[in-house]
Structures are given as structure tokens and as C-alpha cells.
Length: 131
Image (cartoon, rainbow, N blue to C red; front, side, top):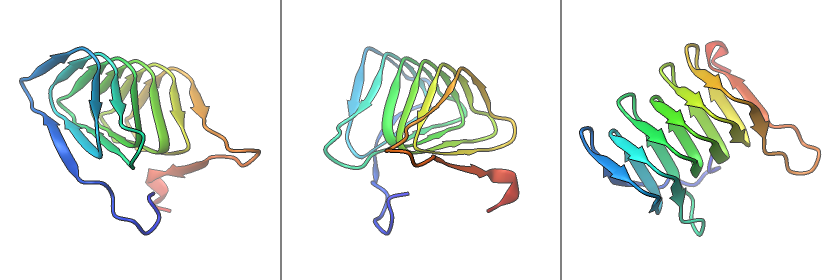
């Protein structure tokens, strides 16, 4: 994902039982267990990771380099490098990705829109094949 570099550390947490209303900007890593209403954006100057847990709901657009979803997103998703959809992921909106890993059970109610540099096709990985 980030080649041989370490993934950025998760430095911020929206805990279960918490709700944030309004746009939220983060650096490096963010884990969401609660509710967020508004766009979730990353500081583009450094690699970023966003983890949306099974208990989380985000209503708004989300932007990050590496996104792992196991909760509910109501809005578009923009994964600049990698998008991982866990079995309980629910997305209502278009999904923009460079590489996609989708587990059985994940649901997308929207269009898949690959981010393509030049004519190269995006990488798709089937989780069931373990390849």
C-alpha cells in the first residue's frame, strides 16, 4: 500500500457514543467508532489512513489515501491509494479508488469509479481468493 514505508499512525479517535457535526480534517491516521455528520478530509501533505469501524456512521464525503471501512458511509468515498471494504461495510454513494479489496458481505449502493493514471487499469483483489 505505502510500498515499504510504514503506515501512518492512528493519532485521532472519534469514540463510540460520540457525534461530530461539521467537516473534520485530520493528519496521518483517524479511527471512527462514533457518528460524524460532515465531510472527513485528510491533510494532503502526508500519507493518511482512515478506519471506519463496525459501530461508526459517517454522513458526508470521505477522503484519505488508505481507507478501511466496516461501518456505514452515506456519501462519496475517495481512496487515493487503497480502499478495503470489510464484511459489514455499507456505502450509499459513489466510490473512487486506485486499488480495491472487497470482502463478501460488503454493500455499495453507488458507482465504482476507478482512479486511473494514464491508461493503466486499477488493481482489484478478491478477498475470498486470498491472492
